[in-house]
Image (tube, rainbow, N blue to C red; front, side):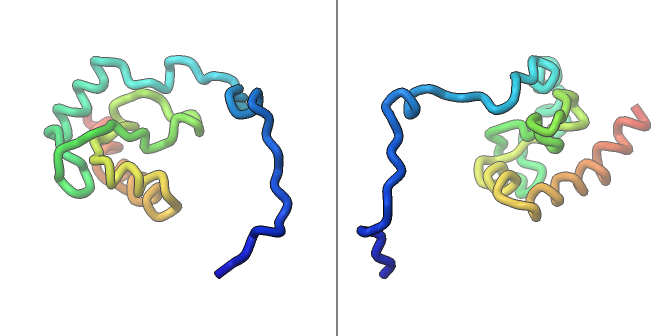
Length: 112
């Protein structure tokens, strides 16, 4: 077992614990899904997670909002909690949803 008892501890003041520091400015509402867009996504995906077909819990930004992903229907999919966690856990999940967008949502936008 790893013994960390003699390792230095970085002190954090109470103020630092309670103060939330934003590293980037707020992106505004352009990255959020409007109620109309949310309804469109839920109807399109039949209220099911696009990956595992369980009932959806969240609407996932395929291109993350933090990366400038817009709140448009072709950038959102229904996901269950587990698949949403997986999507944000690493490269494999992120790429899976990018491929899903290319295969299923890009053609929908071009034909619509």
